[in-house]
Image (cartoon, rainbow, N blue to C red):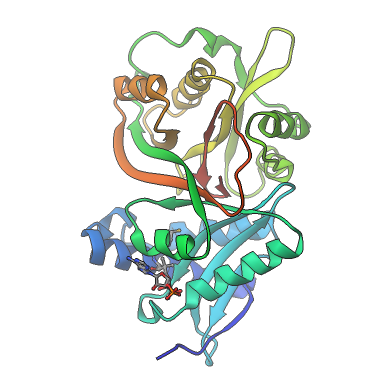
Length: 311
Ligand SMILES: CC(C)(COP(=O)(O)OP(=O)(O)OC[C@H]1O[C@@H](n2cnc3c(N)ncnc32)[C@H](O)[C@@H]1OP(=O)(O)O)[C@@H](O)C(=O)NCCC(=O)NCCS
C-alpha cells in the first residue's frame, strides 16, 4: 500500500524530529542489512548538526515528507550550486520504507535541477544497495570510487616525517573563498563558492580551511576539516596531485591530535591510501560519486564529504 505523504520545505521547528529520523533510519537500515546499527551510537542529538548546517547554507531548500498528521516520514537535503545540485543525506523513517518516500523526494530534486538545466551530484554508499539502487533507478551513474578511512591521530603526532610540501600548507584567510572555488572549478569542473564562504565564516559547525600555496602565491589544494565534536570528518577538498593531497592531509590531521577523523580518498590514489595506512588508518566504508548527465572531466583528486554533501 502506498504511504500517503506530502512534500514541503523542512521547517526549523522540525529540526529535532529530523535529527531523530536520520539517526533512526541509519541505525535501522545498517542493523537490518549489515548488523552494524551500533556504528551510529544511541544518541540522535549529534544528527541535529545536519539540519542546522543545511538550513544555514541553503535556507528553505531541504525537503520534508510528512504524513496526514504532520509526522515526518522522510528528509532530503538539497544544495543548489553554481555548476550542479548536490543531494544528501536522504532518509526515510523505517516504518515508511519501500513506499516511495525517498523516490518522491529525489524526483522533486531532479525536477528543480532540470528547471535550471543543472546535473545532480551525490555520494552514495557502496554497502547500501537500497540507496544505490534508488539513485541508479533515477538515472544516476557512478563515476569515482572512494574508500572511507578512519584514523585516530596519536597525541604525539603522526608516525614518520612530514610530507615535503606540508610547510606550504596554511589556514585560508577570510576573503579567499572565490580563490578556492576557482581552484576546485579548474581541477574538478564544479563550483561551490558559497560553501567555502560558509566554512570561512565559521558560524555554524566548527571548521578549519587548509590551503596549499605554491611559491608564486597560487593555490594548488584545499582541505576543510570539521572540528565540531559531533562531526570529525575531513573534506570537502581538492588537490592538484597526490603529493599536495598528502601535505594537506598531514597538516589537517596533525591539528587533530588525540581525535579521530574520517576522510574519503579516491580508490585509484594508491600513494595517498598507502600513506594513510602507514599513519594507522583503517577502512570503514566504500562510497561512489554519482551524477546525472556526463560528469565533468576532473583533474587532481577530490575529498568528498557528507556534511555538507559534496561530490
Ligand atoms: C535508502 C532509503 C532512503 C530508501 O528510502 P525508501 O523511501 O524506502 O525508498 P523508496 O520506497 O522510495 O524506493 C527506492 C527504490 O529503490 C528500489 N530498491 C530498493 N532496494 C533495491 C535493490 N536491492 N535493488 C533494486 N532496487 C531496489 C525500490 O524498489 C525503489 O524503486 P522503485 O521506486 O522504482 O520501485 C532508506 O532505506 C533509508 O532511509 N535508509 C537509511 C538512510 C540511508 O542510508 N540513506 C541513504 C544514504 S544518505
